[in-house]
Amino acid sequence: MGLIAENLKSVRERIKRACSRAGRNPDSVTLVGVTKTVDPERISAGVEAGLEHVGENYVQEAKKKKEKLDNLKVTWHFIGHLQSNKAKQAVKFFDWIHTLDRQSLAKKLNSAVQKLRTEPLPVLIQVNVGLEDTKSGVHPDELFDLYKSVIHLDGLQVRGLMVIPPFEENPEATRVYFRNLKNLLDRLRDISPTPELLTELSMGMSHDFEVAIEEGATMVRVGTAIFGKRPAK
Ligand SMILES: *Cc1c(COP(=O)(O)O)cnc(C)c1O
Image (cartoon, rainbow, N blue to C red; front, side):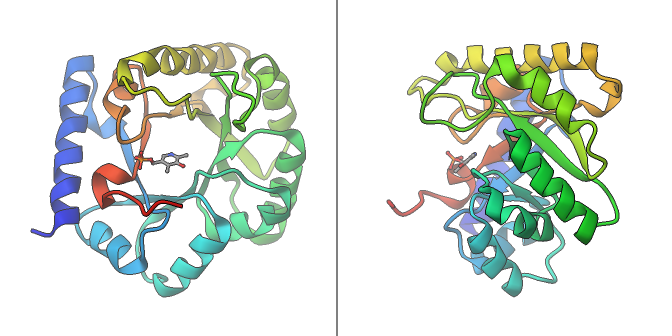
C-alpha cells in the first residue's frame, strides 16, 4: 500500500474511534482531503485509495489541477478566503463553498450561479468564532443578519457553518470554539424557515479533527495527516 493510502486508512480509523466515543455513526462525518500544494498525481492516488472529497484554498491552483484531473470522480470543496473577483471562477470549479462570510460575496456567487448552474450551490457560512482580527469569517453577532440576507438568494443554499479556530498546540484547547460553532448552528436552526437544510459543521483539521468530531463536526478538513507536510511558503 502506498503512503497516501496508508495515511488515509489511519485517518479513517481515527474518525471511527472518535465517532464511537461520541456515539455517532462514522457515515455522518465527511472526510475532505485538503490538497493545497498537492500535485495532481498525488490527488489521484488519494482518490484511488477511496477519497471522495477534496478541498482547495486557491481558485487558480484548483483550476490548473482540475484540467489534469477532469475525469476524476470527486467532490470539490472551496475552503480558502474567497475574493469577490474570483466568485465566478469558484462557482465554475467547485461543488461546495465553505467560506461565505459577507453579503457582497453572496451576491456575486448568486449571480454566477444563475449563469453557470441549474441547481443551487451549497455553501457554508464561515464564522470568526475566535474573534481574531486577522481571520476571515463573519463576526458571530452578525451571523444571523448575514444568514437572513443569503436565504433570499435562489442560487445559494446555506447548509451550515464553518470555522478555522485560532491555532492551539493542545487540541483540547480548541474544543470550546467547536462547541460554540455547534451552538450557533442550533440557534440558526431555531430562526430558519428551512432548518432541515442546516445540517453541516465544517470543523477540525489534522491536529484536532477528533475533538471536532466529538463536538459534532460533519465535515473534517484534513491535509497533512493524509498527504504529509506541505512545503514551507
Ligand atoms: C490547510 C487547511 C486545512 C488542512 O490543514 P492540515 O493541518 O494540513 O490538516 C484545513 N482547513 C483549511 C481552511 C486549510 O486552509
